[in-house]
Length: 156
Image 1 (cartoon, rainbow, N blue to C red):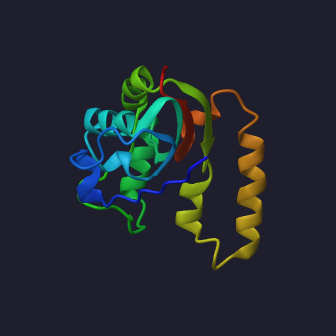
Image 2: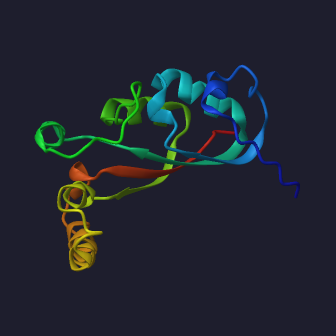
């Protein structure tokens, strides 16, 4: 097996110099939400050989209430001008070209951590981890997740 590593910068993500690389596996962490979803899907699909895998980590926002909460809480947002969180519509568009094999919802308590700053209160960090594990057991708790990890495969 030959290992090839490509680490494109954001300016390369339009796909102009990444087309048809035929990688077996691609890892895309926090890049899709900076581009129009159609362009991101097209670029990532071209990178993967038929039958190849892609692992994606992206911020999500399914709850309008949580989005509003995020806007009123006096915590500095760590965002860039073109950034947005993915929603159900974005994920549906993505899964049409790159069908999802597995998905995990993470950071159910991340928003609380930004408000209460667990670094100043170490016990809170432990409590948030425990609460996170319990919340994952509740059906539909993924609605309140802060990020999603997706394992997808390009059809053969």
